[in-house]
Image 1 (cartoon, one colour):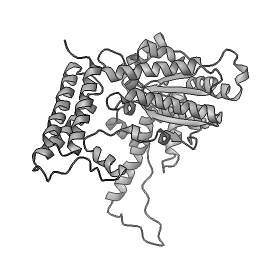
Image 2: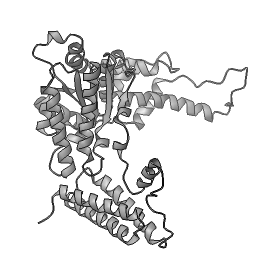
Image 3: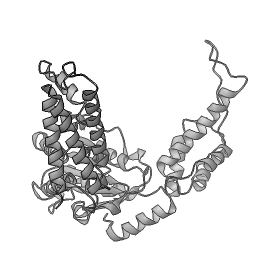
Image 4: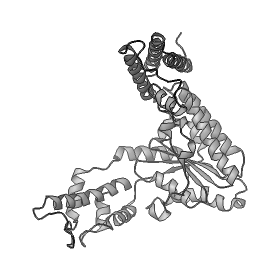
Length: 403
């Protein structure tokens, strides 16, 4: 009977801890044996769960173990440098342990995730996406300003889903900018890179910290979790640490949604793959908001915004460009405008008349950007979102969308 993933994780952790202890005491043989046992256990875990998101972390851990084994074998006994010097300062010991232990975010204060200053993103800078803006306003901004108008409460969990580069992060930042509160930006993939049981602890610490800001200062807190599918994906091939982290998230979300009705704490999750989320997690996000590709009008405004600082021909029409670049995301359009500028700058540098600026003389400027330049870029730069992807988002929205 094979061991459960939790048991394998715990076993690997114990082997590693014993190896580090032996290493610090100069017991080379025991240290090598412990590091090797930890590596073998991780290898078994990866073979049992080949699709686990944590396998990259396990691989990195094994490489550190094997590197330490090599150091110990290539160094004679007595002259080997211990992994931890008992006479070293706590800070030096921590750095030494990093040679064989993975990067541990729990050593970093979660306070570092707090943006003390509100994001400098205003609603006007988020082009288009009117439905998404309205949904966030009525769910977060209005209740924060007039909670007395919501006797039945208001949504605390919002899921922003859609193609990459459509402005999900900007929407969350613009919402936070309108509030007198805090904006906590977290990458879910980083939370899941915790080592052996740390992921669920990190989830708990994160929510505890956010609630603390609400309760102590009475200010709203937006907890923005990017790539939330890394944390809340389906359960087909997950290992013990992932299961515990997901269960912890469910528990924390239930606390946000059900307890303390006046608590101004909001959780905004963002994902490019909403179909990978389990139904229990979808229920915790009462608002599920599709952040779509920009419309023709939005693309026109985006071209107007991104070409305004550029030297372009008067014949360049933002509306013409908007029609020409149908299917391009907001991020794609910014890249296209940047590419047009790079093209004319490249020509300037390669020009025979180009020279370094001379003091007292106006430097040479690139030629004006033309519509032809944009057409040339379109031939080389395709949209990052395919028609098939857009259809998949529309299909998912028909089933699970909730504005």
